[in-house]
Every structure is written in C-alpha cells, then in structure tokens.
Length: 327
Image 1: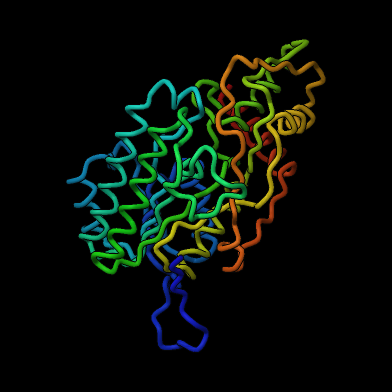
Image 2: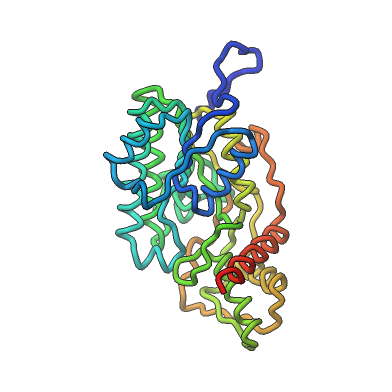
C-alpha cells in the first residue's frame, strides 16, 4: 500500500492544500457535494460551483474549457448518478455511462488545466460481494461484484484506475476515497431511486401518517450495513485533501455496522411508527455484509462525530422541513 505522507520534519515541503484554496466541487447540489461545500466554507476555502443547467459534466469539451477558465487549486469530484437497488437494476446503462462520462471529463479536464489536487469519490460497492469483513482497500478487484449494482461499481472502479493512472503517468497529486453508505440533509427520498435509509424514513413516516397497521420491506432484513452521516464524510474529505497523497483508495466509514432489521427498528422509533414490520424475502437483499476497514483513515486522525440515531433524527427533521416548505 502506498501512503506518501509528508513527515513532520519536512517543513519545506509544500502543503497538500494551502489555506484559503480555491476548490471546485463537482456535484455541489447532491447529498455529498452540498456537505463538502459546507465543510470547505467553514474551513475558510473559496468554493467554486456550477449548476447542471450551466455545465453538463458529461460534456468533455465544455468541462475542460470551464476548468481552464477558473483554474482551481483543487477539485472534489462528488458528481455522480446514484441510486438504490431498484434504480441500479432498472437503469444499468445510465449508471455505467453517465458516471464514466463525468469522471473522464472532470479528471482529464483538471489535469489539462493544471489542477494540483483532486479527490475522486467512489463507493464501497466497488468491493467484491464476498469480500472479507471488514473490507480492506486491498480487496479491490479480488472477486465478483454484487450483481444488483455491477454497472455503477464498474464505473467507480474505472475512476479509481483513472486516478491511479494519472498519478503514475503524470505524477498528479490525485487521490480517491470510498465512502460507506451515506445519509443526511440533502438526501434523496424518492421511493423509486433512494437508498435504504431515506427510503425507510419516508415509508415509516407515511405509514404513521396514514395509520397503516403494517409496513412491508424488501428482503429478509438480515444484511448488515454501515452508515456514515454525510457531514462526517465531508470532514474526512477535507482531512484527505490536507494529509493524504497515496495511490490507494481510502475507505471512509465509521467502522461499525448493523442489520437492516435493526436499522428499520431504529427508524420506526425515531419516526414514531408503532405498527408491524413485515419482510418480503422474495425481493433481493443485495450484498450480505458491507463493513469497511477504516484503519488507514483512522491513522490519519479521523474520528466520526455523529452517532447513527442522532443522525437519523436530524435527517428526519430536515426532510420534514423540506416537505413542509413544498406544501
């Protein structure tokens, strides 16, 4: 594993990210991007963004021209097409092609514009379905992927290889991070395209509102998942930009997991739903377990601050505010 961290005695070494750096956040309106923007602003950096209607990141020529024009000191590539099991199974072409186009445009454009630092954000779904638990970064490409999100995972794996290739061929100070399952303000609560945690919040909220005696959920409830609040991820992104310069992807998580059944119980309590929970075992479970080995990130000084139950309560409150504002 390559981890080229500057030693404490190397005072003459240029810092990986200077104070007040100009940083372009690609995907700034999404769950991850919006949290990264908040974190970078709080840290005193100058954040650069562009809305999708002004810049389609799948357009290589326009993306490259934009990066040459603004010439940021760093780029955080948080833009991606994302979704849960249903969305991945229904639209594999879009999950593969849209993500590949975004990654190719932004990374190549950043290099051509002379951007010194770039952080590419992938996903823990890059790892094999039967990877050892907790999953070390070295498990990448050691076995078959989970079929329900293969297209998305392959796109993200290509992004990791792209980052590694720019480092090896051009000496670029580009890095990649693989977050675990994320949640928080800015999440997607659409039942057809959302991930499991926001989907459960909405399902239980609507069941309580409508007085439903039972809620039926996909699968057996036995798969284990790790969840990290997106504000903790954003703090990890800043730390990596400041301290990490290796070619291996860095796992970003909290180091703890729970079953989907336990997650459902917690969310039902937070939302106040008191009915029955039933499980449709005919529906797919996805990967049996997905817990990341976060020892590398921990060695860099990262500790998550937001406990899961508290984070769920905050996310539920945020969603209620958004839905109330739309009425």
